[in-house]
Image (cartoon, rainbow, N blue to C red; front, side, top):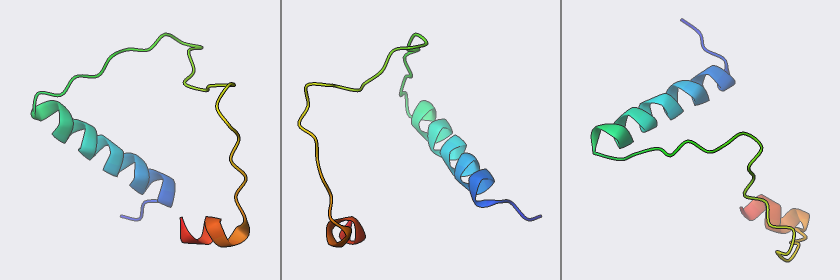
Length: 54
């Protein structure tokens, strides 16, 4: 059966989550609307060459 790239990524993520939880890991529920974005953090400007290396 063919899976799109998005479906493949979701399947792999689900596998990783199951492995993490089976080893005793826990996942905290984060309230809707909460963000990890820090407006005070310095902005990073990537050049095309830097982006290609990443």
